[in-house]
Length: 348
Image (cartoon, rainbow, N blue to C red; front, side, top):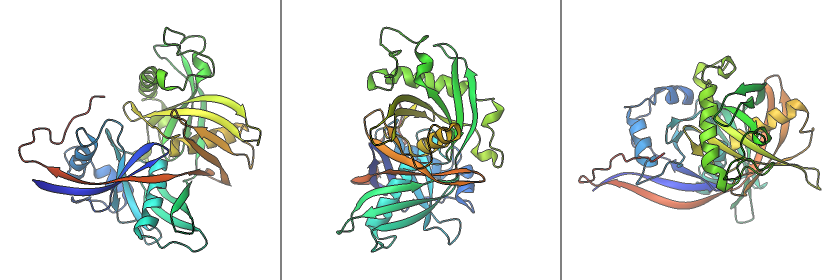
């Protein structure tokens, strides 16, 4: 039996995040963005990703990250985010989990003020996790401060099997196509009730939402608005965000529910950190999210992030997204030399 590595597993609002603090393979590259670009199929780091993400050691919706050196001394560490289809440019829920992990593991010293800042280099830039701790120095919540986010363009029509759909494109560390589920009200009513007005982001519609999310991503593959203006490594639609609007809560917060279908049909169980950043940017650009107002962004499983604009910059708005992350396991992964299922398989 050969031991491969140990991971610390967290969940953030229900979405898994598998942290490998000491990857047992070389991860070449002078920066996190360059390391992602070099993590191609056939590389040792991609083989490790598949081993930890594919069944039977993982599953089609597993997510994780390999800890790396930071780009410079301004950050505490870097991370290479991964999922079943490869390596992503951003991951807000992962950043929250990494903040909680860094404080619990002692990598970053707890600030006696009760808020400890963890600075992390990711492929899309430098982000921060502001970890709130109690008297026992346990992480009670984490604020994810993202890279500047912005609305790219609005009202792009994309053909789907359920009729043409209008989408907005927004940047939150990755490019997202945002779809108001009211788009489906006229065309998408079927035996499953997928077209129920205002109540489409529900578990019973998940299979249909995955299918349409894939169609929308494919339909935008050649769209010039999906090209990042400064770094082509950040180009392309990462995911489709389906949104139900619930209106204004008594405390003045804007309440919406979403599900993000990213990569090739992978589903975020949380409200999606970088996707929420993109949503904040889009709502701010249209005036729907007022200065100082909070967005309550709910997931398909009912968990919630609280999000708002922290500041406006020349590159867009800096969103801050609050949630919580919790440790669920420590795992040691092994390979039996007689095991034929290495690195494994995925069924979706």
